[in-house]
Amino acid sequence: MWKSIQGAPPDSILGLTEAFKNDPNPAKVNLGVGVYKTDDGATPVLNCVKDAERVLLGTEASKSYLPISGDPLYSSCVQKLLFGADSDVISSARAATAHAPGGTGALRIGAELLKTFHSDSHVWVSNPTWANHNGIFTAAGFQLKSYPYYNPATKGLNFDEMLDCLKEIPSGDIVLFHACCHNPSGVDLYADQWQSVAEIAQQRGFIPFLDFAYQGFGSGVEEDRIAVETFADAGIDFFIASSFSKNFGLYNERTGAITVVSPSAAESAVAMSHLKKTIRVCYSNPPAHGGLVAKTILSEPSLEKAWRGELKEMCDRIVAMRTAFVDGLKSRGIDQDFSYIKAQRGMFSFSGLDDQTVNWLREHKSIYVVGGGRINVAGLTSQNIDYVCDAVAESLNR
Ligand code: LMR
Image (cartoon, rainbow, N blue to C red; front, side, top):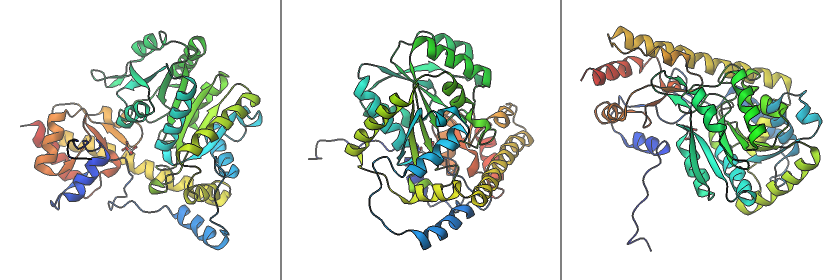
């Protein structure tokens, strides 16, 4: 079957991890995939997760199937985190949430569901966006278009051009937004800018789809809800793909959720019926463990408090490494101003390094950076920061 078929290229992000693992250089540094590391370079299980697992070990009574949409208590915990416990979205039952295998699974289920009813629509993604967005929506059968987002000259948001483009998007098209910690740029919208976007969505009738993979890594768990809250207040239909991979460190448990918000409870019930129909033919029902862990933490105040503390520790270390990186480059006499890296939010730094430099760093220094110059700041540690800064300085002074 495969004799005349060419191999597929490696994934632009996860493929780097494979190459990194095979690299024999002891000095190698993986700044590719968005996975948190401690200053020792480890990605440990959070203490609150270990505590929740200890509880589960004693109480879990069955491995029978979960409902198609997952455990209702998990969905309720997800909704409280997404909207806030007092949100009118929850009290008016306007949201349908299904447990999905990670943020990617949530995006794909949302895409499949949308394809059923909007087969001729385009999906609009920010320029640039997470590489897998293109893959997921294309695989679901959509044609993609992009709207202006990042301005490489100012290292900031291209807001006016973005709005001009959104104003032309037809009703029924789908527009993908990063709710916070834009991947790869780390550049987010302010509250009033989200308000303008929501007003345009309302006027034009396009369907916003929020990718919310980094709640808590921007300004805080509550503060990072701003996009979700703004679209919810607009009373329009929209989708949210959320994930516990990063903020709970549950990467390999594939723990996320797809949430469809509607103007009324009756519409939400219809949305849920179609979510279930879509999930049933994709993977039948979700894997349980990660959802059990997240639910256990979020429904037990002492565990939730511990989680918030650990999340803050992760964020504080990332912020400290941003400063160390910028200062490290400056102290090596590099002319280029990298201070914008300190203002970027989330796990990534859109470093401004071009693909030639990215390739040179990999080839000569075994430093792995995603094409386009995205660096996982959480991969920098006090042990590798000097090596990385020396290498970047050398590559820029070539
Ligand atoms: C990333 O952007 O590095 C993460 O979201 C991991 C992934 O699946 O690409």
